[in-house]
Image 1: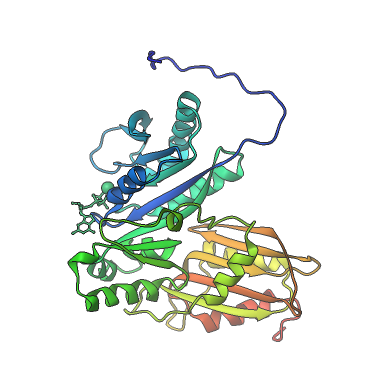
Image 2 (image 1 turned 180 degrees about the horizontal axis):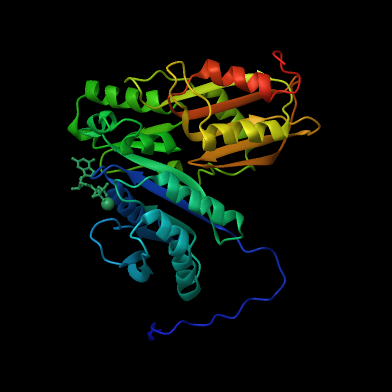
Length: 365
Ligand SMILES: Nc1nc2c(ncn2[C@@H]2O[C@H](COP(=O)(O)OP(=O)(O)OP(=O)(O)O)[C@@H](O)[C@H]2O)c(=O)[nH]1
Ligand SMILES: [Zn+2]
């Protein structure tokens, strides 16, 4: 049906009682300039046939236009929504308008099954991700499923090692730190040895992330979609994953790395909140060189005194969440497992603070 879209349509609220509306997964596709993000999106769109996938291409950031369009293609057709960018910043725009645009589009065009969002090569996916995360909690139609980072096999290494001014993390490393899945693309352009180096560097940053290697971003769709990286329904799966997480050693001085530890015992919930806030927000903890630890991604399974269920800890950017999982504790004593990805992390110092301030019967009380 062709009609004028100028006038906002009033859509009646469905007042029928019934099960809550199904939330639609959003996968954020990030990666440095030219790594193969759009190639991946196009591949997914042509490959799959039984999902209605909406693709949001963000060509934000370039130019100073106050209005940018949000192109959504679905089943080969392209739809556009106009976004007003108040300050030209993707994060703020997504927060203010992006989700609304998606919801408007769904009202007009019907529900999608899946949303893929490509960020620009220089975007900080953490900011974008946390918007979707927060909104999902506020009863939005969508939820964050995972963050996929595409890496250029040929130039990725150089991008990951690019030095930034003091205190800044380079964008490529941040994108890897945040990823639930990384795709090392353009393997046709490198020798095995070069590929090994890229893989090792990715692993040195993020000890949790799954790594795929591709040409033309050709992936198995089930490896990319429905990762459920932020759900608390899957506590058992996360525990398994955390157990496999490897602490990493930075390839470069000052680069991002993964720190992980296990501590047995029950935790004090208030103390854990204080610990996380001191770490994420106040940046109170420093490494041996006196540099403040800075966490980009955080995951854990923890035990609170008096709670039979395992509690999942998730953190992205400056947000974090503690959610009870359906999983009951079986072993005794309970093992808290924590994984931190970030800069200037010192595992021993973190663990010591954790034990002495968060564990109920901390050995160092
Ligand atoms: N040789 C080779 N080229 C590839 C491969 N995958 C993608 N390309 C090419 O790399 C270029 C960049 O790919 P895009 O998919 O546009 O990359 P992008 O990450 O979306 O780029 P931006 O949106 O500009 O940041 C295109 O010319 C692709 O055809 C690959 O596996 N091998
Ligand atoms: Zn692109």
